[in-house]
View (cartoon, rainbow, N blue to C red):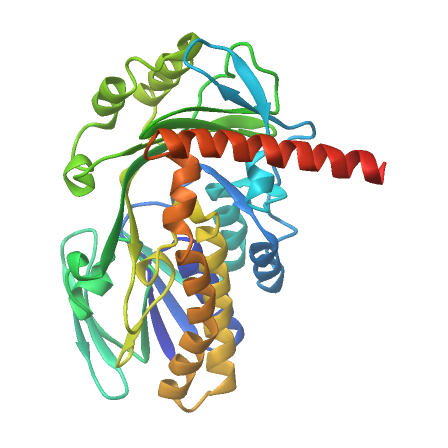
Length: 383
């Protein structure tokens, strides 16, 4: 008899799991809170691990690539002066620049017409059994239905409903970095910079980074430190950012970027939280992606981890087709070292994006210069 899996969340992790499980003969059902599929999104640097997972899932070739042909990064000071620094995307070993929506579009082609997808649907109750889980689902009209699944996969993001229903409240698993971020596409090129130019305007506890993309508007990433990130996440991002960055408007770059923010609803504004859990599964419920570990934007590995996790789950279920407990243990054994490795450096990497003091600000500027010089040296040596 074909096994059914409920996948909560039509994001990168959820669609990756759907593709992998479908290949193994499962019948995945994907539910998504939103009334339709989200598109667009912010810059993502896809590293080798993510590219390999995308290739294994069969979606890499159809994924739009947006790495500029001639990319340069600049450190812009308060007075508008600039200095060349190392390419920030290469610092994260990410030779392919994409939008989050590019990854989701490619995965959607692997799901559309092959897997049942229900929009405007959320889980409101989950009853874990020895071999199955009963899930009460609420549809767009507010009507509740109850269905039985052999596996429930919570791939519904850092503020996961599945995690709340089965494992406990967010505060038990959240580990705050003490920062906020706001990412969105700029509506126009940054005045005075060429196509392919990226930039960073950094001060103590606040930074704007602009990541360039080929053929699409650059992504603006505002980030700042705060003692109360959860409280800040409930505020209006535009007014908050205007206040925090008021005296850092180098050449009008920040004020123009915030004008673009005021004209779009395609933005992410949230506190930066890692998720740490002793186990990612309980009974017949499994968490995957940001729901389980959330590597944050600072890691440069969030999207890659979602695809890797989906593929790893498919492989674990293939290895133990008749032993769910063994399959879920194998999945955790595969993913735990990877997640620990990248979570270990998130606090340090946050200093590169948002220096917490003058020493960190000076240190990151020196580091970018050293990286630039070393790359220039290697380029000349190999030419």
